Length: 263
Image (cartoon, rainbow, N blue to C red; front, side, top):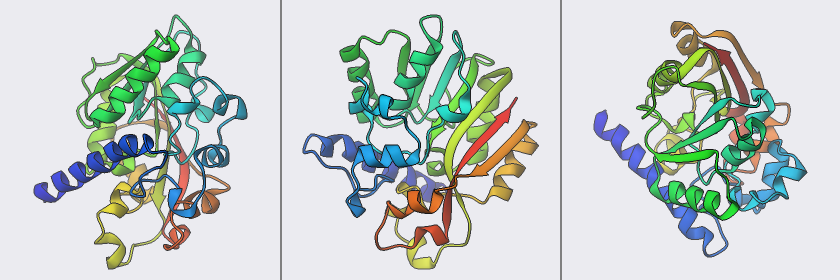
């Protein structure tokens, strides 16, 4: 089992590293929740999943790789001076947008296990002169952060990629301050996958087969004593996941949801 988990992790790292490398050629890997297989561009994807036009036209637009399934800031209610953690921060798009909301007195920390993504995010931060963000190479199951140091955790279509989701939320609880909040956009499973879909590892790194059912997620959060748990399916979920593949009828198996909770 451990060998399988490690194989999945390495596959995810490889595929998301390839996204950065492919970007130099003006394209995107098909082995991610990117939408390129259906010919939908990044900006249109981002608009569909909930990003404001202003954000997509901002200086941070080049950090948008169209990899999300929602806009976690929409439910985060960020306040000036807060410390925000972005789990699976990628090239930094959500982190940069959050940095504007928390202001100079606040801070945003991005954690990602893919070296190429962290390097790209740091490059974007330097290019745009963003001082209140920090990008760290690390794994969301083992956060290199102090206990009770974070006000808000955001994440966008990343936790489904972890092979140990309970450990992710255990770490999230550890680093959150009392009263700290989860503001997550992710995919959940609506039905069991056919064997041929499960057998393809690319479907794991495409934000498909790593998804869990809402019932399992609620159990994890409840066992960890999170409060005010709220899981809401996005109204346009079918349209969002349909963009990820023109071959698989993904809306039969997964849906995009906002996940909120409080420590």
